[in-house]
Length: 262
Length: 214
Image (cartoon, rainbow over all chains, first blue to last red; front, side):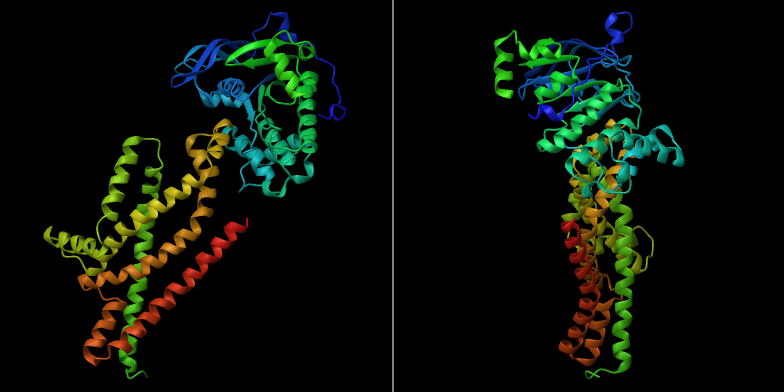
């Protein structure tokens, strides 16, 4: 991992950590099964406003499933999950309202190939929020500048590199002005150089105070950017703490995982 | 010319005109029927999927000439006198609707699930996900097989001869009956069918290549 390429940022103060305000995300004893296989065995986790939380762990440890529960892509069987004031176990939950507050970026970008970068970015604001044409153009300019792709407005996704596509995907999410962003292994399909440019984009968002949950295999990045690192193992939160926890693992499992990962 | 008079040749071409008209009816009717079938076949509702699947299976399991007979004589038994064109058009609609519905269902399903998911995560409604994200991609995929199927439609209109619809096959048969030159007459008919279908085949292949390149 080219740690030098990633500028360290100051660990931010998390206003909600004081305990007075509600956490933005709160898992309480959340359980989820696929058929007879229980993949989440009672997750407890809190994310405060402005915090960056990195979920790490082996494949199959449940970290992506946990992340996908946060915006309702996966339903769970037991326990509680509150996100941005929504109760995700409620029967009358309005998923479309929730998703206006919670953006997600996927490993495989999932840009719309038949639309230009600008159309990709403005589709949801125009159709969901009724943003006007000129306003949408301005919005596209603003979020594309945030990810450093102002010159790609009229390009189609296939004309962009993987790293650029992923940054457009981030811009597309940002255009909905979310309160919380989810990143699901967003650099796993990229080579180290392109990984660097996407991670720097995420770091800038963190520095701007965006609340984020990210599933990642980039240990150095998790350590430097996350306020809280959560190590998941066999469907449980095995160990959690500040980024430096990775330097001094308390459990055998995390020690093995970090040892194999760095 | 070819041992046929100008009038006889003109008569055969007149039949070709009706073949084209019936083909267009079949394609337009097939589109009107095929779109809802494609939507129902890829719908979330199990009842819709089963019902549309049964309809498709049923139509695909009956030979087109039999569909022609059933529609033509079925409507007359009901007490309505219909011209052969209407009966043939209805039969072609059923036939191409079932096949186009299946083709388009496949095209909708060929759009990756992750596209639906990405649209869903941007808070688009199910209808918006379909119209703005999935449909435009499915249409692109659908062009080559659809144009290819139009060739089948043109050729299969010849079955309308069983209900005495005046098309290219029918007009060729009539001229043969009066000239007794089956080889000449039916070779001419074949050449005309080919002239209608070949450009569409070429077009379908060209679209196919274009799709694979991108």
